[in-house]
Image (cartoon, rainbow, N blue to C red; front, side):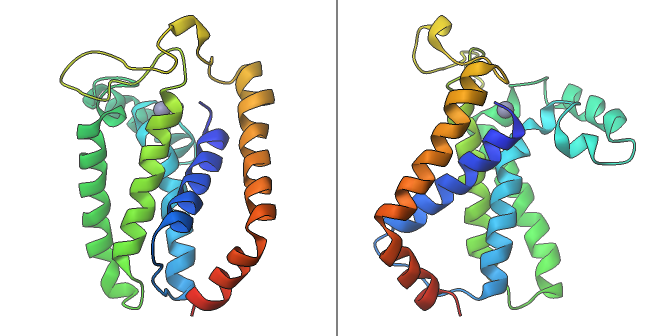
Length: 193
Ligand SMILES: [Zn+2]
């Protein structure tokens, strides 16, 4: 999937998880914003194994580092697209949050970390719908996908993704907001302090 579909899926995943939690904690506006940012980063983080990923494209000499990191991670759709990769990315995110927490002591890093992980999981789920599939269970070298018949899956960046999947997720979000408008308003009023 393309980066924009991953970002949209990541935020959709975050809202779904939040909405269906039995009870919601109160968080500061700063934490809420940091959660959104972390979630978006998580949504594209597994693609650091691709030298053409937006993350590398936006960094000076990013293409060069991207190629090295890709080799270290075993190539595209390998380590970072597995459960072990989620653990690894989660561990790196935790390290980074421990490092930046003293600079922003009022941020609740626990929630920020979870928002990141939800983004990462949404990435793997979305990539599972594509032709290439995802090696969820590495080191078992099998790529899983849905539907199981490879030909029925989506080709990244092509018509099905651009004209069905991406708009479909937008429609899902709009329908979700329309259906639960009052609940969403109450959530914004009472849980962000
Ligand atoms: Zn990917």
